[in-house]
Image (tube, rainbow, N blue to C red; front, side):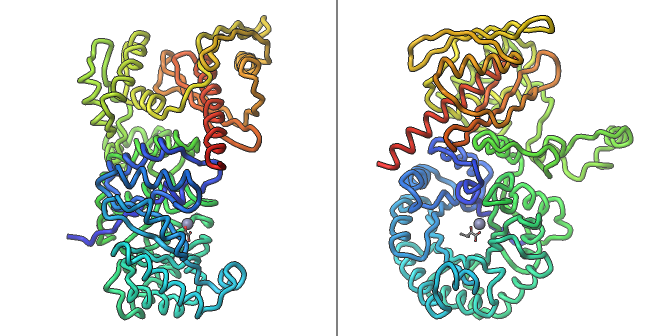
Length: 510
Ligand code: KIV
Ligand code: ZN
């Protein structure tokens, strides 16, 4: 059996450090459930000392999620470690992940500490964490730019102090694959007790090399990879989980290792992360981009029709891409929908299923055939819910080449109905102006995209907007067979998120 690579998912921690990618407690919990379906080994749920909100999110996940180790990040300080443990203690095999920089540049300018002090603090902190749990990870921040003999010295010492996983991050995404692989080989050769711990890597993508560096590390003995779905993460992001996992699976002939990831959940997970964070996946993104399995040229299409493997190195179904699957129709029942949702890789509670079923039936009334993507879009829209302060009651638009576009909108604002109308440059502009008047808001629209969930003129419109108010950027998501209505819903969804986040921020600052 090829050796196992442990998959440490940090979408909820480093991934959330992507500018504009913040998630609320409910969204984080939903994502943690999805990570369990993917069968990741470790979920890094957050950085408990960072804020009360972060603490609550980690605690909620540790208290309720079963099927993966739950990790929480802590600097090398007793306060951080205590807080992390407080959040994690009820988790299944909880892991304290403590970190301290080891590069001269970080020690000198950021920590203002010398090597002896860093070594002593690392040992003291790991010993302190090990009093709580035997599952302790130590990361040498900026390791790839650190003096390697010093990292060896620190790693040897923290293993003695109780660390069971040692992480070697390329914090700034500076390393090149051959160089990074050689560093891993050096660590293995020069740390006498390295066999007592798992060696891990955590690569950033500043030069677009995070996956290549992680693979080089695996080839040289690393056995844990830290990664995120869709490659989210600080600045240019982290190693993309879908890429590293599918590289290992697809090139098993070259890589004597395996992961336990259930790859069929990759595509739904990518969609979920994109919807929750509002970070669209670029169409040409490896594995999960909309074009990753699209064949445009006639020669390629012809080849694939004759034999799929002429131009496809992976089977789309291996990542759960079931595009074009005819799911159900108007007469399908709740049970059939439930079965289909499970095949698609989602696990919903009965109450969530009820809500999705109601939406499914409404759509089935206007559409003869419903595809997987439609169901997936409903799931996204229904279960990633935030309180609806603003609710669309009705929307009507008059427009055309000879008419001044005019929208009339009826909304519920905290339960009270309001109605108004406005003109605009186009029907969407008119709709958004009316909504802004009725809600008394003045957010700025930064991004607007509309796509159809499935082909055909009766497809559902899937609208994504990014809006900004007082420096806070949120996304809004709307789905409807009528694209103007979908656009109105997306805008309102964004405004609801803004209200929600403003309230949450108010709570956290109290
Ligand atoms: O990039 C980094 O070094 C980190 C550590 C906290 C592991 O995110
Ligand atoms: Zn990082």
